Length: 389
Image (cartoon, rainbow, N blue to C red; front, side, top):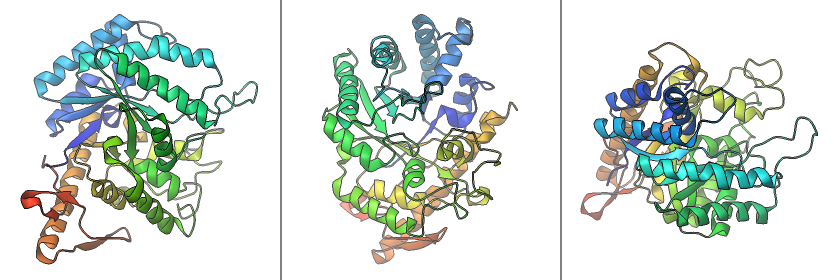
């Protein structure tokens, strides 16, 4: 089997300037046969179909109508919709009324939309709500029992839905209480439901363990590489591949100056990693744009687990807010070039593994020794196989 490329619709342009229709067109034109649909894009189309004030949430009917329209376009272009995301700010809420509102009012619409879209998974990122700006009190709790209870309730309701919905939990590098893949994996195991699994993102894994945008050298510490290596070792020995539902890939730009007060991307009260993520993600293999995270090593570790599903680009960037009508096309083209470069790297490793049973090369100072494992023809463990665009 081969890993195939997908792209998250947010990676093709801001919904404030670019329609989901244009973004899907450009994804398909550049060879992407699968997308991850961002809720902002779905709701933007719903607003176009049935205008409401910006302060109001689109109605259920308009959201479902938008889902039908997107599904029709994707069917015509032979593009698969993998999931809907992100279901933000849910688990561990201090405000239990808001928690129940999400369960009773928001979630049913999402699940009905998923059925229309032909998808079956909702991505849930770890909560990163800050302290209440008025009271200064926390808006979330770090109590593991409460977090697990909340997420288990999602799984229960998803299992009861006629379409049988799955949930993928992702640790954001700036999450208030959950910011590492290991913590999210602990929670997934505690939830212990067949339809509740993990989402791994190369940027968030590196962003929590390896990178620090507030540091001069962009690293957490002198031990960043060793710390990441140890974490990936634990991934290899503990993570159950059957509980991995989504894999997203992105690199990050090394900043010319620390992201502190006075930096163009600095926002008071906002985690620096969040500001960095929103402005500075990159497609893989974009070294010329400042990419410096050891994302190929992380990707290797994930493929070593036996992952054969889609690899979805999730690239947030300041460039997505460019109102130029070419923005979706330019970002889709960058994604295509990135995938082509990954395929070249994979083929090089495949050739080397066939010749010697071992391959190695250096990229951005990080040595990858051994093939990026994938089971291929003849049952031989060789280098990664990736579907060409």
